[in-house]
Image (cartoon, rainbow, N blue to C red):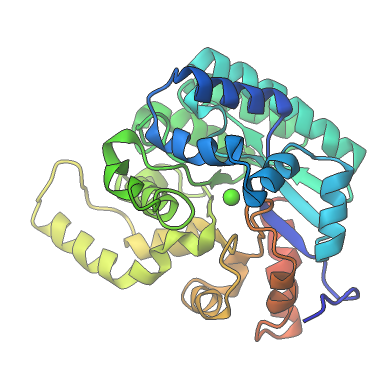
Amino acid sequence: MAIARSTDYRRIATEEGWITPEMMRMYLRILETKSIVDPGFYSLWGFFGTSQSERARLLFERIQDIGERRIADMEAAGIDMQLLMLTSPGVQIFDPETATALSISTNDTVAQAIRDRPDRYAGLAAIPPHAPQAAAKELERAVRQLGLKGGLINSHTQGTYLDDPHYWDIFAAAEALDVPIYLHPNTPPPQMIEPFLSRTLDAAIYGFAVETGLHALRLIVSGLFDRFPRLQIVLGHLGEGLPYWLSRVDFMHGGIVRANRSPGVRALQRRPSDYLRENFHYTTSGMAWEPPISYVQRVIGHDRVLYAMDYPYQYVPEEVAAMDALPLDAMQKRAFFQTNAERLFRL
Ligand code: CA
């Protein structure tokens, strides 16, 4: 199937990974020195950073380019614009000071690439969750001064989760700035990853969805969205499986609350599924298959499902033609590829 060159919508891809050569060198140094304890990092970047396979080599080259090479790939796939985000695990494996400095420098770098090609690129801000006040400050700088469109968090930070109020300065800043936080996957943390590893199920094949879906549910049941009712979180991969769980989570959460079963679970103002419908948006990164896309559009709503490719991890131009062929009317298709992204990220 050929990719249509002339459409009445712009194709905006909303979960597209990049990294600076400097940070890639830092990753390679960690692989050599084994200086952190994170089996998921060694599994993911041990492969993409050092494997001589074609898949790894191409990704290694592509992910470090936010210039003309990437634009040529976009051109070949019919992608008009990419929303760039620092690839996983980003700054979050470093100590808080290093992570803060890297957030600032990488945000400056991506902002320059966007200034060079504002027709082609927009971006989200890397922030250091484990320095919450610095993260809030950098989110504000990146949005107000650099023109970035929201914050990026690569799920857990060294095994900790954002439902802890320790982190909530970040959400206060996002809500005040009226920008979304993209909760992108990370490999499962050490306390979770063991049974995934021997069958290489730890990353995009499944472990990402398990870990990030859990993270999103932790945010919901913690009461985060009662505290910040306008906050918007973006999930990739069609919501990491959560739209399939709407009724069961509501039923079980209600039972847990009524039985007063756990001090970690409290009554919420709305049902868990209400937050998943009103405080989340969903991108199709890596899930270019009609049945689950149509399902999420049906149970969540056409206004909250956005196109994403997941470049360069899943650079498959033919999938764009399959997305063009989704059973949508003209307005729904424009929302899917273009206007939902323009509204959410204020492009
Ligand atoms: Ca991704």
